[in-house]
Length: 387
Image (cartoon, rainbow, N blue to C red):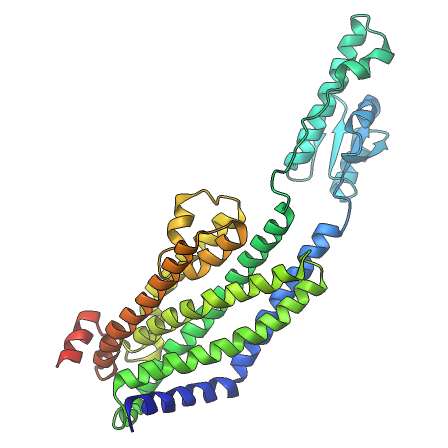
C-alpha cells in the first residue's frame, strides 16, 4: 500500500472510533447545550427586570425619595432597627438611617452608592439654598443640570457588540472542547504505547503514517462535531433573538469554523506528540502542560476584544501569531474590519506552522513511540528518530 492509502486506513480507524464513542457525542451535546443556555441567559438578563435597586429610608431621610427619582425603589421605615432588619431579610439592598448613615448587609453596590451620594448632596444643597432665602419653588431649577447626551457614531454598534460577544463565547467553549479532545488524544497515544499495541501497528506502517492518519481522522471528526454544534447553537441564537440580523449569526458561525479547524489540527498534533513522550498514561499530565499554556494564551485576544480593547497592540499581534490566531482573529473580525492581507497572512502563517509542526512533530513522535522508561526528552526523541 502507498503512503496515502496507509494514512487513509489510519484516518478511517480514528474516525470510526470517534463516531462510535459515547464520550464524543456527549461532549457535542453538552457543548451545544452550554452554548444554547448562554444565548438564552443573555436574552433573559437583557430583557428581564427593570434593574432598580431597593432602598429603605428612615425619618427625615425620606427627603431623598424625590432626588433618587427612578434610580431606586424607595420604602419608608419607622426607625433604624426596622430598616436594618429589612436589609438582613433581603427585602432592600440598603437603608439610609438617621445620622446620615447607610446600612448594607455586606457591600454597597457602586451604582447604588453613587446614586445615594448624589441624592444626599442634592438634598443638602437644597437645604443650603433655602437657608439663604431662595424660594422653595426655584430650588429644583437651580439644582437641575441637563446631562451630557451620548451619540453613537457607528450605526451598527449593537450588531457589532452582539457579534463580538457571540464570537467570544463561541471561542471559549470551543477552547474547552479542544482541551478535552486534546487530552483524550494524548491519553490514547500513551495507552497504545503502554500496551505495546503501537509495536504491532508499526510492523505495518511508519510512525509518521500513524501521526498523519490521526491528524486527518481527528480533523474530519472535528469537522462533523463543529457542523453539528454550529447547526444547533446558531438555531438557538436565532431563536432566542440574540442577533438582530440572522445573517450575522451565520457569518459569525462560519468564521469560527474557518479558524477553528486549523487551530484544532495544530493542537491535536501537539497533543499526539506529547502523548508519545510518556511510557505510562498516568504521566500524560506532566507533558501536556506547555500545550495547555499555549491554549490559555490564545484566550487573551478574545478577552481583549469583548472588553473593547481592540486598539491594543497585543490583540493585533495575537491575531497574527499561529497558535493564538485561531481564537483572536475571528473575534477581532466580529468587532472591526480587518484588512484582507492580515487575514490572509494570519491564515497562511497558521498553515505554515501546521506543516512545520507535522514535519518536526513526526520525528519526535517517531523517536518517542519506541522509547520506554519514564518521560522521553524531546532531544532524545529526535536523536532516536535519526537512528
